[in-house]
Image 1: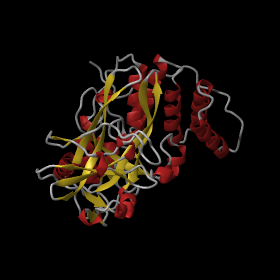
Image 2: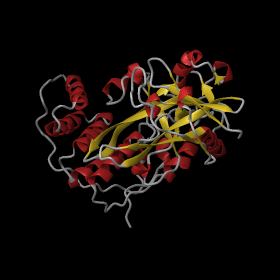
Image 3: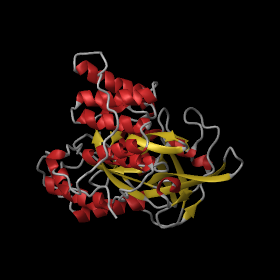
Image 4: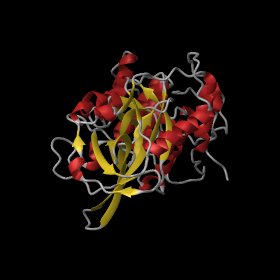
Length: 402
């Protein structure tokens, strides 16, 4: 069987970093995963759909405090309430399942939504001793890697198990271009971790194992009823929660750290790559589902593997030339590679299919402005080329977001 990609650790080691004394060895990465596993909870719910059938969904959260036998969980407000803003009039029918599989009832009287942001806390009782999250009370920056932990809905990944994925904090300046919850709800951190529906409310940890954000959403759209992630993930920084925590009545019980992790050295980055890149699911090169290739391209784009992302978009477009999201993704890769005219042409193709795409318009027009012309580029791409990627691309042929 022929596969689409392999993983090149060489690509990661090219990142310019600062020397520090803290070494994030593979065992330390495993320790971060262990911390994430023990603090992350599953928040499943059952509900009656529009067709009258009982359905299942879920969100995630993290255990942040304990008082006696009462534990407090931090999550996204939209995980537990059907009303995204204002006073909640319709709480979801949910429970909480800890990492050891024990299931607990939740008293909705313990739910407290934080004002103005998509955050909430609730409580459950247990005589077991669960780990509490340490909250990183600082502003995450683009100099650091982060790790998303949560429970994807099985309809996205095929089975119910906790997902743990590395990413990197990205500049806030790209937030206005994303199709996500408004920043007015507290979403001020954008990062490149691969996330899925069901991970909302789950913790985002730094390389010290501290929770620095609460995951909320990935940028995506529904195509033929299937949600496709088309961009990055967004989260609410934990320092927002700490600032508002006095209104929850549990501030004295929180484990808070004001120190950020030291910058990583190149060997640490290589270890992160070894630990996680090699665990990604391979895709059969003979796969004929364009949405699978689109998802593959989006995943590789977020992981900074741009050559493989571009080839995946080409494969998707070969199978379905009318796939707007693949043209848009191809435009993103070409934009990063500074192939401006080709990127403009890709955005133009996307806009032919979806003329109301504000994000494609913004990106295209910014590129036109940088070229000193508001006129469209005339040589539109015709048929996408069939991808013929090498098993391992040379580092200089694959500029990376990392």
